[in-house]
Image: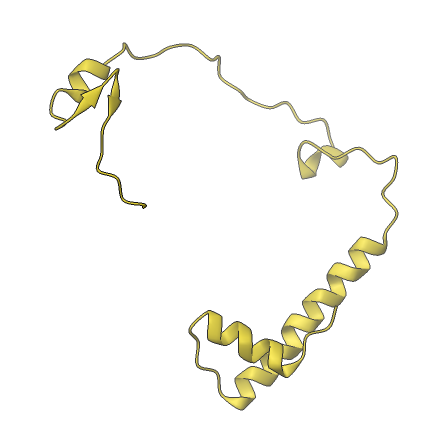
Length: 99
């Protein structure tokens, strides 16, 4: 997938960027180089290879340090909702913003 100068202009317009001709050309070269690398990576056959849980796992065994999933605070819903202007069934009520 190679980008053209018109693609760069369109992307810059959508991002509300104003690029000079030199910047636009440099951006075109950089993005096309990036897409070339992506195409090379996509060409590698990875069938039968399981994903690693951590990048360093290919070098040594990694033990994840996970804490126990236990409740550490009591339920404070009623206290937190006391200052809300409108609450119904434990949910905050807010004005409709999308029509």
